[in-house]
Image (cartoon, rainbow, N blue to C red):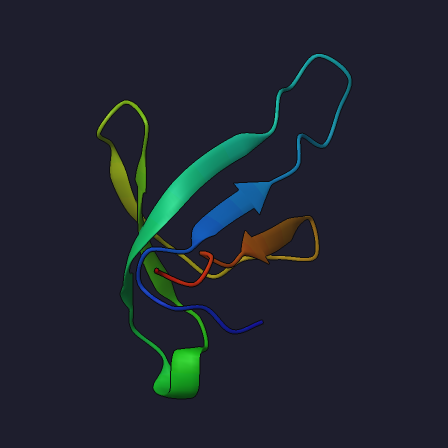
Length: 64
């Protein structure tokens, strides 16, 4: 799993009733875009995560 600053990390809810969580990647701490990532959630909370198989990176689109 590789990411760049500005990409989004989508973590799927694992059980019924738990919503997906989306966070913006603000720092890539691993080599060559690999985890861990520092992420910021919509409520302003920041965390360092090493995503598991229930997460995907949504890459930012090209800038025009």
